[in-house]
Image (cartoon, rainbow, N blue to C red; front, top):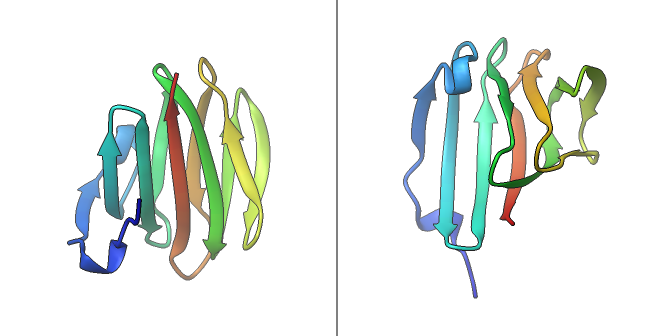
Length: 109
């Protein structure tokens, strides 16, 4: 199946999961999970939340940031992947001066 993010409208979320600032996202969802391309503006964050329905895989396309997963800090840079398994808690913060772009897959288990 082809997912064409170029044909999708971007939605803006403010204070996602209790975070700060704006997150822009294009999202595909079905019963198996979600595939998301998102942009966190500088200084924006996705607040601390628990992965209750599935694991969260975040590949950093560009930008810099910080993830905290179960209390452990992880530097986010282009080309790295942040993984938060089902049952764990995490947050993501854009610490850089440009958008933090993530390609995310949420696998429903």
